Length: 201
Image 1 (cartoon, one colour):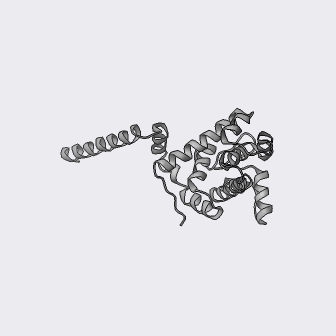
Image 2: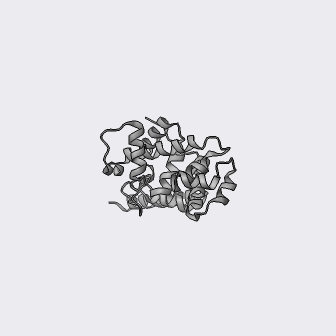
Image 3: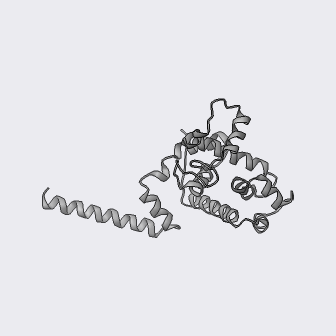
């Protein structure tokens, strides 16, 4: 390779590094942006599946992606401490709810490690939670609380009454669920603010 070619390639590499640096440093969440760049496409690898499942269940795909980020950091083989599996950390009882509701005949628990199946079940479950809490002025924190801690706990926290997201947060006696709801909402807003779009095929 000639010296001139090495020089040109070096300049291109420096320009790319500078562009990446500017992108990271001007981002609202530079740590996330850096992690995203370092993932070599893992953060976007399920976008088509996310968009398709979200469209089927009437959800914003960016919300589903925010849940996946919080649950697994886009790792399809992640196993949770309480039997949760896959991208959306779906449990077997949640999967069985989906199986019964949709009369699925071929499901086995190992399917939760399949990204398509996992995203389908997790998105369905989240959509059901949003419908359940649709009478609340802002149903999202209630649905996310249910996704993380279960419906019975959110019912206990809300007492069956209409309340604001802030009131619900104050009523939550599980700090990790309070943090979970805030983290998903923040990531969802981040995706929207930077103009991310996911389209179903």
